[in-house]
Image 1 (spheres, one colour):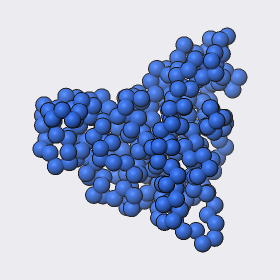
Image 2 (cartoon, helix red, strand yellow):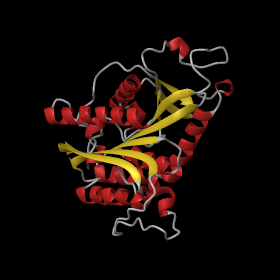
Image 3 (cartoon, one colour):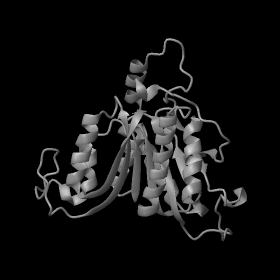
Length: 290
């Protein structure tokens, strides 16, 4: 099962630190132009305005925040977008192990993982983190963010879609998103698909030029071969997005499999190109929409 497989562990010195935010381990990284002594805001700190201009919320794939690959991605995004990146642990005691034990049963592990990690467990974690982000620094919070973007990898992609539909983030990027529903994608339409019958955003509905534009910018980076997001589901997602009025983009990379943006084998030229191109694409998306 591709969602459990790590093709390579990426090397490099990470810049951020894991902090405990409301009992949630969270990797937090800042752009390198911010001295460590200024990374914790307080009442006497004049380095920043009352709120951070922008920040990124990264939502991890099934190996969680201790995977060095995703910490390095957080550092790179933070550097390229000149903003903090916040990577919370969504899984508690139930991530996939980085080193698989002997006789690892990937299918059974995935079944157990999904039984332990779902909207009923993840949404409360995100509520805590979002409340902390908005809380004034004097009260122990992050100090607030004017524009918050979301990046999701595999499992985390579903929750970026959900947050974007709820208006909790301003723009989203999802990399080979997993286990989302088409109803969650339709949620990006706002009141274009509010159930009142004015517009039909079902996958089989005809296009309608009267759709009101909706500012729910979502970029998707997908793999050519993906047993979690197969071509049929990806194309259905695109068809639904066409009917929502949302701002969206989808790019699929040849010779890639599920997880390539975070766990791909970067010794493979095609995989490395796809990973780096998706990362550049995320930066360009946020430069435009965040």
